[in-house]
Length: 532
Image (cartoon, helix red, strand yellow):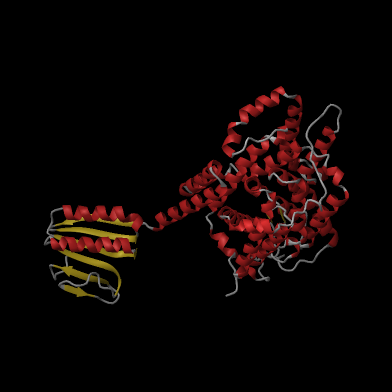
């Protein structure tokens, strides 16, 4: 069956449908996206522990390759801040050379998932887990980038980075150059938050670009000696994986990394697609096609040894706000990135590292989104617990472990909520009655056992178990009820058992057994007269 959201004719409003491209608007939008993407591409590469050129290469692929494929019209792809910590960890453990193989295999796996139409599968992930994942990515990102924002080096793990913040402040106060670098980083963060409030045309200039311009100007002043970006030859930075790297696929840790990259990159891209679709009234995202497009982009990025690619909210929203209507703008932005890196590489070497770190601190804050926690608390405290647990586990351990535990917690929460069993007990004359309704699953087994034991302990000669109100009775609960019934028979008690479901015998093998169509089956043990 064809996927509904894949239909090109799906409309979200009166202006939906094939857009008539305005070439001037598309070019202008592409330049805006380019200005937003440039510092992000470089900053993500630096935060990932790889040469800046690899970030630009991934940005170019996100524009020229992913942007040209029909999936999402206005969504823009490139290296994402959300994967920076994961990439840095992978590079530290396996080396930059292995990164290409991991990204390549992840891309191929994404293509397969899209081809078998599993794009929608990622939308089944609990929103609490997704928000917890993003927060768990954003919080360590902020703390890790606080160090390069002061021309320092992060100690290592997220916990170590958080614990080292007091020492970082002490170093800043005793080192003039570190203080200047930190000032540039703080100015960048403040501009990132406040620049959109600037009135007039100036407010439409990307805040990151303004911060980069200020940083370059300050770094050029006499007596200022802050660290600047080290940029090499774009083409020379390409590292095509060889046989030695592909042999690493025999390592279980590499396979785990491939699966982690695939799941996180796919989920981030498709969740971003859903968010971008809400920003405009044009054609909706074709999720399976978009997943294939992301896979093609990552396959090319892996072949070139570049960073993994995902859809990015910052660039996508800038594209929408700039008035883009077609894929042309996002494709052209990749062309501008390529031209800039090839023709003006010397400009990149003027950018202070602390400014790029400030850009990523802002990105980390947006990923962390602290306002979502009290909002989730007000809406659903169970989901809040899942969201918080996911975030804390990611910060304390790693991204994969946090996501898996978050998913498990989400499943348990859903199972508990679906397994709502109402058990009522009361005594009538010589009969102990237990009435059950709802979904009786193994998760509610302790409650069921407690009610059965209470009926047995009542001392009454007759027990009536009424399960006709149960909509789902799993094997564990059914087995417990049947065992209890058999046990009480053995003790000489009269047991009446009413089981759920039309035309089903409740218990087989003893004195009387009937099954009435449309009415719960009734098995009476020790007495053929129904107890009212």
